[in-house]
Each structure stands twice: as C-alpha cells, then as structure tokens.
Image (cartoon, rainbow, N blue to C red; front, side, top):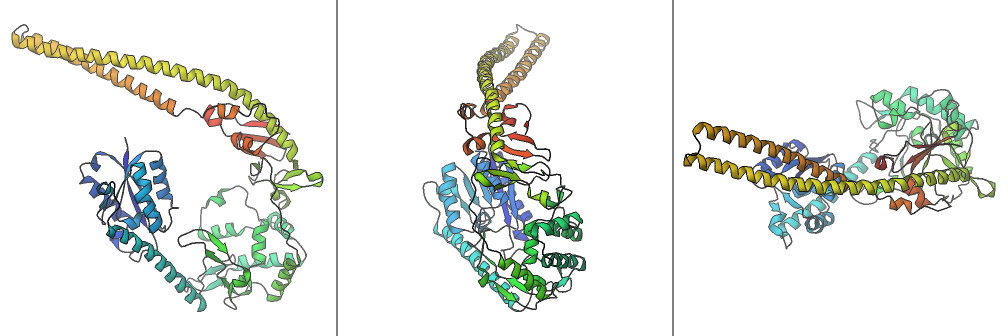
Length: 529
C-alpha cells in the first residue's frame, strides 16, 4: 500500500525562526490535522521526513533525498508541506518538480497555507499567485544570503573574528565570542612543530616524531575540550598526517593575523566552495595574540616557497581506489618506479613506528595477477550459481502455479459452504430442521468457513511472499559471466567484481566481492601474496 509523506523543514535562513508557527513540531501538527480531516488522505499510511537547519535553496538535504528515494521506489503517492518554501526556495528547481517530475511520477503535491493541491491543476499549470510566491521565495533567499555576507564583512573589518572554524591552538573567548584566546597546551604543540620544521625536518619526519611521542592530534584535543563523539574519533588509529602539519605551518593565524575570504560559494545555496587565488585573500594583521614568532614563521614559509611544485599527472590503473591498508584502513598510495612499474605503499607506515601497516611496497602487477586469478575462480562459482538460480526460479514458478490452483479450489469450496449456510437457513424456515438442529448445523458450517478462510489467507500470503522473493532475486549472473575468458584485468571488470581489497602487514590479501550478499557465496576471498 502506497503512503503519503509529510515533509517539514526549518533553517537559519528564516527570519521568523523563533516563531512557533514555523517550528518542526507545528509543521507536523498542521499537516497531520489536514490529513485527518481529508477523507481520501486519511485512508493511507502516513510517513514523515524533515530537515532541521538546512537551506531551501538546495535539494541536497538528507530528509528530502530520503523522501525522493522512496518516491523513485514507487512507495509514496502524495507529498504534503506547510507551504511551498518548505519544500524548496529555488524557483527553477521548484518549478521542475511541480510541473514535470511529480506529475510524471503521479505524485500529488499539497502546500497547505498556499492553498495549493496539484490534483486541482491536472493538465494545466499552477495559478500566477503560486508561481509568484515561489519566485519571491527564491529572491528572498538570495537577498538574505547577500545580507549575511555583508554583515559578516562588516564584522571582520571591525576586527571581530567571524570566519567559521577556530584554528587549532585557539578558542573563542566566553566573554566575547568575536575574540580569540590562546590554549597553552595546544600552543606548545604548534611551537614544537615549527621548531622541528626550522631544524630541517620535512613533513613526514615531523609526523613520525609527533606520532612516536604520542602527541594528540588536533581532532583529539578538540574532543577533549568539547567531549565530542565524531565518527573520525571512533577509529582505532589517530595519527598526525602530512596535510595537517602543512596546514599548521602555513597558517598566518599563528602570527596573530585573521585571514578570511579564502573561498567563495559556487552558487547561492550550493555547498561547494571554490578557493580564491592567495592574492585575493583578506588579512587583518595583529588581530589576536600570536603563538609563533614572525621571524620563525617567515623562515618556514621560505622553505615551502623554495620547493618547486611539479604538476603530477594522475596515474590510471584498474585497481585505483580499491586497495586499502588492513591495519589503518587508509587507501594505499601508488608510486611509479623504474620501468614504469607501479607499487602500493601505506603512507602511515612512514609516520609512525607503532603502526602495523605493510612495511614494504607491493607490486601492482603482482596484485592484478592475483585479483585476476581470484576472479576466474569466482566465475566458476558464479557459473554453477547461475544454473542453481535458474532451477530455483523454475521451481518457484511451478510452486506458485500450484498454490494459485489451490487458492481457486479454496475459493470454490468457500462459495459452496456459503451456499450451504443459506440452504441451512432455508430448511430451518421450511421446518425441515428444528431450532437445535439449525444451530448445530449453522455452527458447524461457520467453523468450516472460518478454517477455510484461515487456510486461504495463509496460502495467499505464501504466494505473495514467493512473488516478492522472485522480484527481489539477485542480479543476473549473466552480467558477470560475460567476463569469462578474459586474460587481462580491466577497470570495468574490477568495478563489476571487487568491492575493496585489504593488504595487512604480513602481505595477506583480503578481497571483498561485490556480490557476496546477493548470492550467499563463500566468505570474502583471502589470498596470500
């Protein structure tokens, strides 16, 4: 049975965010009341989706994406919102959904306070006032965005810190949220990193010293202060990385400058940020207490500027992005050595003495050979599985046919018993049965009908389950068997077969296949180099 969906949204772009009528709770109450008072809508199952704190200028919202996924799966037949702006504030995108996508998919769209119901506009476009309201919502968002940018720019010119994330080593003053204060323990780590760099250590060497000495990473320090439980902190290995050290060594915040306007949005409402050229960055000098001496900072920058940045060409190979370290779970990097041969290595092995990552590089050529060999073994298995699946499907089809015949037979018997019940009543009125005989016979027939209905429902559910199972059958083996006989590993083959590969410190190779859950085949393939 299809469902109707209530969608609620609240974001910081709303001027009336504190007005109770716009809260998620009141959107829910309004929509549920509307549904309960509508005879047609109240007959269907109700489900709800919401986004709290997301802009209406983009459809890249968790709640709305989950709802659209169910719409694509044909599980929802109507979408109800408080008003049109709750669904989208983008005039073009909103029009696309209201006039093309939803009508094409047979979705009824209702905006309660805008008095809009797509059922009233079948075969024609919405009234001018609806189009005008959606256009106003679009203009409103762009106007708010411009005002927010202008407000932030004014605060920054006044020296107020309002550039987003606070750099490692600093925190916002509790008495003045626009002021940065130094965190002594973290500041000492930053000074130590600069001393190591001035002493001639490169990024990898600095990381190794920090990790070997057990110095906490910026993320761990942040968790210690704010008691967070972020996904990154649940990993068993938390190591300093070259990128983190580079960011610290090149951050002008540590000499007391506030740097802002480093990025810009690609479009209003878009989450994508474009990095501006460094010359366009804005700097407010002597903004807060420095952690590093300016002369020390200048020495480190000179070291970075001396290095020539060479444009690296992307290396393409079939297993790209599929090979991970079995210990730290990082993607293994690849290097090209003499003879154009590629080798995998784990970057974490060089930055920590305690890491149990693979200590030596591993040949891509050798790994491709192993993967191709294992794929050929899987193809033999899948060939047998294909025959099993075909036979299973035929058996299910035969079973369904038998069950459908049983259902027809039960329907006939039920009809016969219903007729016997009517005859019993007629015999009673005709005097052929006394009251006691009538009651006994009526109860007997009623029990038979009850048992028959129970058996009918049970068989009907069994047929439905069989049909459901057939619809959810695994993807066709033929799609994979087409790779039989191939003697060279290709990217297309890897995408079809390999989910990911892990190589541990002892160079054991663990291949995780894409089809394990579908065919219930043997456990993940494990090969030893």
